[in-house]
Image 1 (cartoon, rainbow, N blue to C red):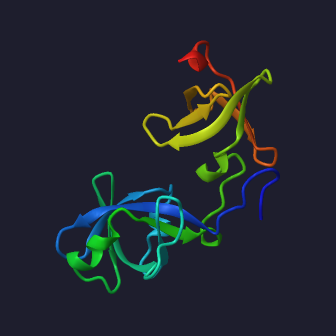
Image 2: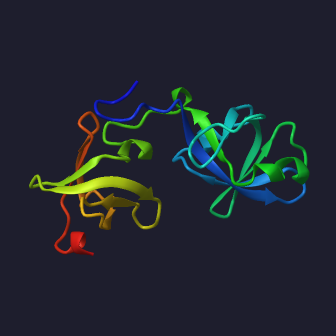
Length: 184
């Protein structure tokens, strides 16, 4: 179902990115793209393989999680029926996707990142700043890339101090930028 004025909601969401094979026993290093990796990467769960555009990869588009363990800033994941490095190496670079219906819905004051894409950005005074183009997960705060009508791009920290509210139905993100932020 599409949001008012927005794109259709995807049936699957990216929950991880397979960076590379790890070791010889069929593990892959996964960057989690979810706040709840322990709830997503559970043994027995089937995940779909996707490409950078969010499209399922065919054939052999699914994998079943066998085990998960923390490793550095990500996780080592093994899959059922993929017992060694040779079996998992072709998975490198793919995204792991889960059916949206199986994931916890965002809270009342939250959105999934894909829902931000294309949102109109305006200040608390009603001045239109531009459109959300991308979201970057970085510390200490995620950054929202906004493209202005003149093609200029700016990064807006996704903090409660700056992002004041959003309206998912009207697809508007309201910000209160500190002086000079929009000129950077």
